[in-house]
Image (cartoon, rainbow, N blue to C red):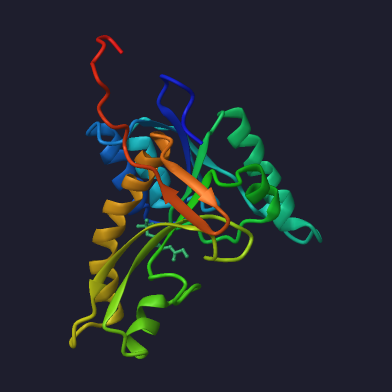
Length: 224
Ligand code: GAR
């Protein structure tokens, strides 16, 4: 599950909107905190801010138009096959869904089993789906948060990699809570990518085990 030895992990990002999680990953890579390279930023929305962010950083931005696929009985699978072609061409090793608002089909899930991550703004398995910050407030939850998980066919159901929790305050509304959660998303998503890059994520059924870093050996050999 780790990157090809020696080379930075090749990451593709699928995003539909403003792309702040994409930005967090770009920033962490540029800061040297994540050993990866972004080989494609792909969107189903021509005007996605995420694509602009990619261009600003000199990263390949790719719009894959869903229109030619609509109306076919297999439209979602056909669209995902087009995405898979791009991912294959770019030799992407890990795919990140970052505010990607289309449901991915088995075409992508199977090709990238345990190699595709999603970030979701709730403490899964509570509140999959949409409007989850409002739902957490309406339920009277005292804690909310975000989850990075591997993607399976069930929406927001895959094995959980990392979570962060935040308090829900009495005067929160969905927007203030979403902003508090988002700050944590920007921390845990890059961290999950780095764990993957280090080959430290082991999926066992629905559990993700995080292997500890290598203990220091008896001696250091330089260069290693
Ligand atoms: C993020 O809050 C992310 O967790 C959420 O969309 C937002 C995208 O923001 N994703 C989902 O709800 C997926 N189920 P961004 O475009 O600024 O990264």
